[in-house]
Image 1 (tube, helix red, strand yellow):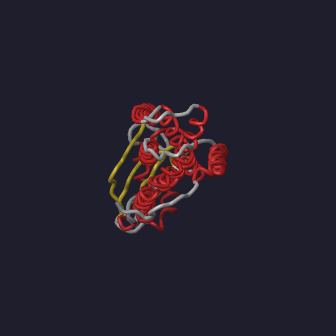
Image 2: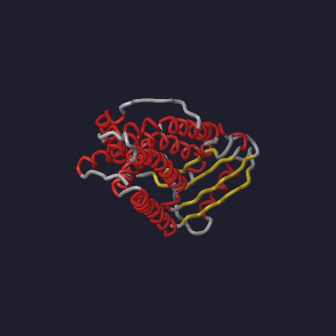
Image 3: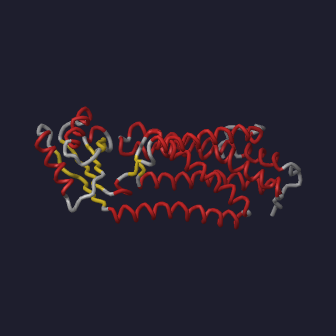
Length: 305
């Protein structure tokens, strides 16, 4: 296996108190941003409304403001107008958080653009209408999916390792979700089903990184020369998996960064969640999950398998 670092002896856990301070500041920033923005900016997936994806004959990037103005004059509420996919595809996505029967909203938008933006013909590629009942069910199922994933992780970690490992892992995942959500609330970006998908992906990535470290802890604890200090054991295990972690992080960041800058506005929020989640997920393994496991061991010593 490729190794960037042959042998390192960084005292990661020696900075755990500073790590807690950084995490506390980030979490407080998330709370403040929620208060300032009056909660989450939920998409039509969760509050209901209409989404239309249109492909124009000519470039539209410079005319997004004009299109938004045309839609706003229909008094359907604040409309979100953004490009979708690569810029040369000339695709525009219009989202309106107004619930109405049938296609009243979408028909009004299409008629207004045909009349007030006649120099650039378009065709509708996708049209979605989400009612209040469906949006409510989607919101409940999204929360349920995240909660069930936490429960499943605790059970899995308890069987593969021990209960303290499961609690330590989930504490890091909760931390990751709060931070990623905080970035979205600061930007006042929409919380959509794509965001939920990104969160579940981040959970998977962060958990995988934590499992690699915890698995190395278990292996080292069985060796004859196992350190007597649990903190030293954790630090050694983190250092031994550092090359693998760095390579994985750089690979993931390379891909999602390309999507962030070249994928268009429709994938930008998803890519941003993945970028932040990858960085925070690695950080939480070292400065949330591992310190929680260390604290647990100081209170109730964890016996090796």
